[in-house]
Amino acid sequence: MLRCISPVDGSIHAERPALPPEAAAAVVEKARRAQPAWAARPLAERVELVRAGTARLGAMNDEIVPELARMMGRPVRSGGEFGGVNERVAYMGDIAEEALAPMVIEESERFRRFIAREPHGVVLVIAPWNYPYLTAINTVAPALIAGNAVVLKHATQTLLAGERIARAFHEAGVPEEVLVNVFLDHATTSGLIAARAFGFVNFTGSVSGGRAIEQAAAGTFTPLGLELGGKDPGYVAEDADVDWAVDGLMDGAMYNSGQCCCGIERVYVHESLFDAFVEKAVAWAQGLRLGNPLDPETTLGPMANRRFADTVRRQISAAVAAGAVAHLPPDPADDGGCYLGPQVLTGVSHDMPVMREESFGPVVGIMPVSGDDEAVALMNDSPYGLTASLWTADPDRAEAIGRRIETGTVFLNRADYLDPALCWTGCKDTGRGGALSVIGYHSLTRPKSYHLRKAKP
Picture 1 (cartoon, rainbow, N blue to C red):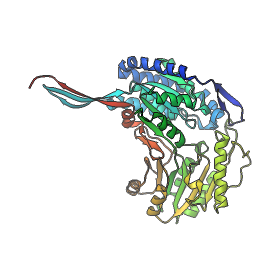
Picture 2 (picture 1 turned 135 degrees about the vertical axis):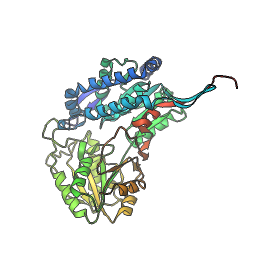
Picture 3 (picture 1 turned 90 degrees about the vertical axis):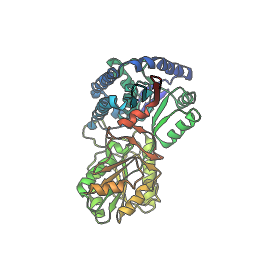
Picture 4 (picture 1 turned 120 degrees about the vertical axis):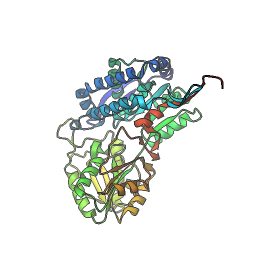
């Protein structure tokens, strides 16, 4: 039995029985049989059905927002995820015809030569709890548009999100066998992957989870898309607008209680701005209100699980014991469980876990640097590489710095945003593959070459 334990009060918010292996295999086989007919539908029809499913999902938003608060702790004042979901689906629908069009090499009296894009077949989407709709839709929507069937497995912490996505798309007309929500334990999931049940697997989650997926797929040659951990840095150059940088980076660090794949976890500030930046960052964090996420006045909700909060507490305690300075006192609402107050640390170094290991919580370490070279060296001193946020008045300088950073996305004067026109990707332990953009469609299809000789020489 899979159980969602609410971080709000520790109650069981939802529970569902996990499918036994035989039943799970039967569900996937139904999707496999239904996929060719789905792929044979006109592309424009598939696009419109996906758009309609997205609209139906948006119509549930008033129910989804408090449900998310109860399942994973995000404050209701954040308003859910439909804005981003709609933006991504709209863009991927708009580019579908061009992105999936054959690449014509020759069309002459004698030859027709081109490269087509073929759907993989059945795509498994293993979605995380921190952005359960946004992360799922990144693959669900373009996979369906490209002609794949989709099996969606959601994190137990957001057990009901997959049900809602499937219901919305079914009500809009997507066949039930073409988009299937399933409840699986880890062993059954690994067994299906090892049995080559899927043509493509997309996983968003931890590094250890990504390794488990790779191990399950070993020898099957199943293509994988993996978005794993992050320890995303920010760099504030000497010519940056300090107030703007503080607002952008601190929001990137604390939004969703810091539980963001591309959240800011470490900041490097030019020494000339360091004191001013720290003072303003502390004041920014002091303005947060930790509390029940169902309260409209709450700006910082509980972390999704006590063990996540305990990890952050251990990192902060270890840093302070090693000489770091914690600038915020314990929050009165911090209960030692899921409710964890924000923290800003200085006097930190890369010898401390809080600057090396993923925190995924409302804490940020800030270090002074002498300039670009030191900042780049520190930003690259990480096993992760998802995004990096640069703050400077000079775009050319930012681009030059960006070429030196080991990361998937370079931001200038912003942080923690996914542009659907750009490939969402990472390097090092952050994973491999790319979502959204034209490249997202290429990941969800395979090339197929045609060399058609029409006449004798």
